[in-house]
Structures are given as structure tokens and as C-alpha cells.
Image (cartoon, one colour):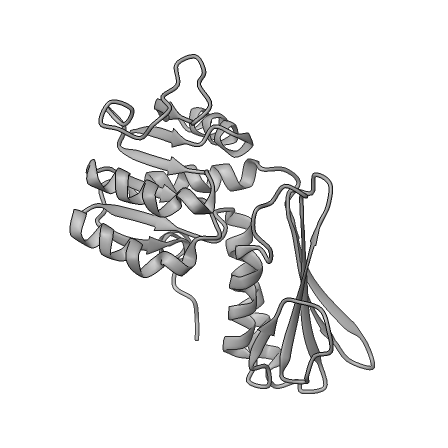
Length: 250
């Protein structure tokens, strides 16, 4: 298969490296900043020969990029985060175009396995009411969204499985016992760290995922491109995980 890379920043370059290690040809690179052998717009010319487009751009351009790629009848990996309030519109675009897309708050395989661990842990601690639950995440200072999409997904899993927690609180200030506090930190060049903790008077248990670099995100996006190739419809990383690691219990 062949892919087009939309957005040739740090993540776009990592996707290029990951694709080549899996024997995938780069049909084109699309970026607003001109460069050798690059296109500056999504078009029939820039997507010619590509089976799947992988988007690592910015939240404000995500929906429009979906619209343009779908109009050209190409499948897509939308790896950009922070645009999920427009999910309903994106689903309608994909339905009408008859194409396929896979979206996720995080394409790292390790993070998606982490989600499964968090979900199982939450089920266990649901019956341990003397434990409070919290979370925090750290990212580089240039990250566009806060909290991260991964933090939001993690919080949703905790709220779904711990009955005594009713809503996630991401800003600072006094919280109620029903609140799940999930803090965000932005500094330096941190690729991404997510921590969930369960705290009691006796002890604290923490579950942590730390990205060493961006390669895990890029490889997951390339695997997603392989998976979405030839499919129709709107999918998430959970659909890919079911194929690779089976359905979740419970």
C-alpha cells in the first residue's frame, strides 16, 4: 500500500520513518510549508496513488481535511487530536462519501493497552470505596490541547467503571468527593506521560505510561493505516485493538 502524509512536522517525519520500516511507500507529503517533493494542499494531484492519508496537523484544520480527503474517495487516519466536538459532522462526511476513517485520542499501541489496564483496574477499585482516584498528564510546552485527548479518554474509562465518581474536573480548585481530578502539566519537550492513582490512608497505587519518544505514536498510526485500507465507515483505535488483541471481557 501507499500513504500520503498530511502535516510534515515532528510527527509527520516520524510517520515517514515508521512507514518505511514496514515497507510502505510514501506516495506524497502535504504540508503548508513548501519544500522539495512536497505539496502544499490536499488535492487530486497530491493524493494521487495514495491508498490512505495520515493526518498529523492541527485541530482547527482536522474537519476540513477530513472533508477534502473523503471527497477524493481516500481512506484516512486522523491522528490529530482536540477536534472531537465535531465528531458527528465527521461521521456524516464519511457516511456520505462511502470512505473509511480511523480516529483516536492516541494511536500508540502501548497507550491503548494502557487503556485496557486502566479499565480493568477501575472495575476492581469500584468495590474498594476507601480508595480515591486521581490522574495527571505531562506534555511538551507546544502541545495545542489541554487536557490531552488521552487524559479525557482515561477519565471517561474511570467514570464509566467507578460509580462513586460522577464527573471529571480538569481545572484547579476545591473538588467534591464525586469529582475525578485529572491535572495537566505543560513543560519542555516531554513526549507524553499519563498517570492514574488510587489512594487510601494505607497506601497509594499508581499506573503509569511514559512515552520515551514519538515513535510509538507514529508506528500505531501506520498500523492503523494498514488496518483501515479498504474499509468503509467510521472507526476508532478500539476497533483495531479488538482485531489484534481480542474483545475485552466484561
